[in-house]
Every structure is written in structure tokens, then in C-alpha cells.
Image (tube, rainbow, N blue to C red; front, side, top):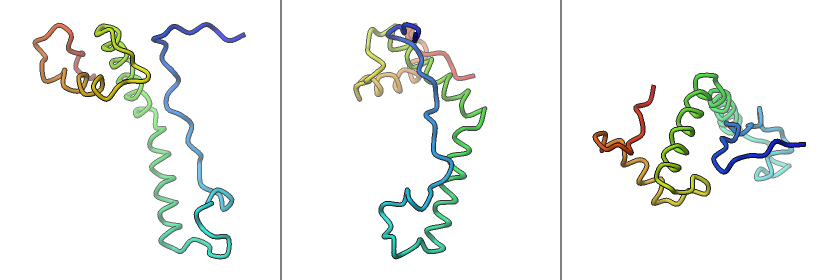
Length: 108
């Protein structure tokens, strides 16, 4: 039975990313025309970026940023998900006002 979640529960981050595109995943490329060397290089670069996005330090940074954002949203009485563009803008503008008590803490 799944545990109950609070409205401010932190979802697991990051979302899993496919390791590499397979030929069947390349729906935009016609079956009769395999990707060129440029296309294959682009797929390889995307795979490398995806691997870096899952690096432990990156995951820790995502988690810290997300925790900071939802904490700020709770203090501001604003929904974190779905966050309105104005909410995100207000959050991003807050570090410019460090003297305010509602400013998020500095990133570690």
C-alpha cells in the first residue's frame, strides 16, 4: 500500500531518462533513411548530456533547489505544483532581496 503523501511531498528527482535512442525510437527519421554521421553524433551528445544530468552532484543540486523552492512556496502560501509563471518569477526575484525574511537561503 503506498504511503500517504503530503501536499508538499518532494517527488523523486530526476525523472529517469532513456539511456540511448534505439532505431525504433527515432520516429521522426524515415525507416528508409538511417541517421547520418551528424545525426548519430547528435544522438551520442544527447546521451552524454543525459548521463551528466544523472550525476550524483547534479541530483543533489536538483534536490536542494527543489526543496528550497517548495519551502519558499509554503512560506508564501503559493502552490509549488503546478507553479504559475508569476510564482516562479517571484521566487527567482527573491534572492535579489536578501534582507527580507522570506528570502530563500543561499545555495550550499
